[in-house]
Image (cartoon, rainbow, N blue to C red):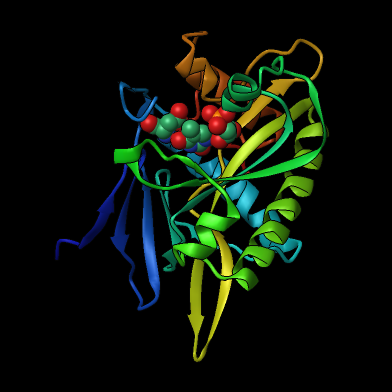
Length: 252
Ligand code: TMP
Ligand code: ASP
């Protein structure tokens, strides 16, 4: 059997060349990192859970007409996606103060924000993904003004969708990060939601108890990360009532 070509290995995923031109295979690892990989661990079953959760969110977005790179899940750890050129920005949407916003502006975590706030970080691990403004993005040519309009519109549509889906299962979407890719179709380019959407890249709090069900469990040593992610999957009906996501999966 021919060995497939690895395109890129990141902290939580590996990208391989896909079976057809214009496709890639995204493999979800069990590795967890935080604080620019200063804190690292391997968490059994995390990749399987994130593969399924990201499939669930991306499929939902595709279904309501928000374009994503996701085509279909291939197996427990892999999904087939359209290949795209990633814009070097982390696009963050915040509904409640938390994390770096709380630190930077001295706002208590959990404070509702007057409206969703969109922020950008320049994707560069060596620099620790610094916060940048639209001025930097335009001046350095990372994205055009038209791209920025499309990016804000995509980010807010993802926020509406994700907030609603999570609210329906008793979870508050505090904030999240997405990445945006360019897909070329002849002479045209289209922007799509790329990478993954999972509890690795969102803050998810139980509405009643405030319990954290996202990567802050790992960042802040709050208990079992897979239990938290499995709880999100269970509430969304992706997983059977018990198990950590590495076993058989419910069909409905
Ligand atoms: P922050 O409060 O640390 O800036 O994080 C904002 C959101 O972005 C939060 O949902 C976690 C997510 N995030 C990532 O997905 N990757 C990262 O590298 C960082 C720092 C945050
Ligand atoms: N993903 C980033 C890292 O490892 C940071 C984070 O999610 O907290 O290093």
